[in-house]
Length: 407
Image (cartoon, rainbow, N blue to C red; front, side, top):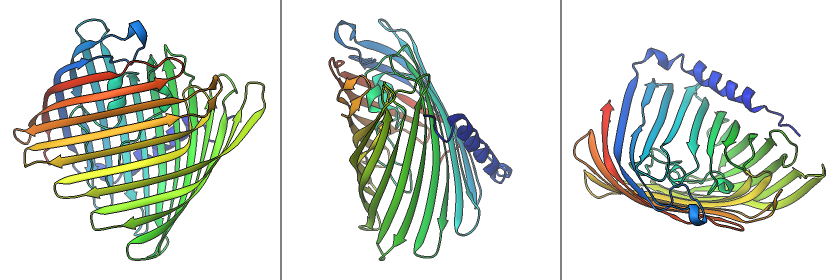
């Protein structure tokens, strides 16, 4: 089967939508920041290899995270990127990882807001890249507004070798029907290509519709329907779709803390090697607890849903994550995050369970508004049948200097 929404077309739509939204804020002055990080890294198994191939590595790294933002009263556009170079002193060849993203928001009317996002990322499959899906070397950060817990990427890719290139795009609309009800609709796509790996190139599309109704001053009811379609390039085996209706509740426990919970079903249909189809029904749901305070922010989330895997097919994936940061004083901060993901559905290569876990803690100190230092120990472990790679214990330390705007 083929997705009803081609990845390339939707990616173009999102880029075009984001570019169109830039027309208004383009007249405002851009706000540019360029944090540069550099330091040393020591890892016990940086590329999550198994057996005798698992060797330690020491490297010198350099990372840049430029951001350009345009903001007006009704719109904002952000262009950001990340470039990281690891120069290994021995054992491994040098590593380069890059990412670029464009996000835009436009208030169409008092009740309607349109948003678009597109990104491209290329990285080798190593322990550092798993950790850096959610944060830079300076440690995990929780943006102002609504903090979110880190969520792992494709669990089945953890511990595999090679370089992965990913294109992602999303467009969405939020509309307030009245003072108590709201509708949102999101359309997204992704394209994944793997080099020097047994993983399978794929493209996927997803759509999500949500109706929210506020039933009390602090509580609201959510009704959602999500559809996911995946196409593995070059062969039909593993192609499939999933439909997931859920019913949820969002409760504001205080001015700083919000709790959400949702439960439902995932109806999955996958094309098997002989052309037949396998249909399954599994439980789906999510729960989260997030809080933002003057000194301490945290967010925890657990999720179970049907997702495409790098090995072919849709799998019911269980993932959990927690992140937090504590500001000790005006200059010192501790940030922590941990994630766990598990995929245990039957794949095309046979029944197999794959797990991926990671944890890190960053201690940082700001010397002034531009210069800071950080110290980050981390742990990454991939569990794969029949052979699991050795865990990676890593330590990164360095300094960061922020060029451009402050604040």
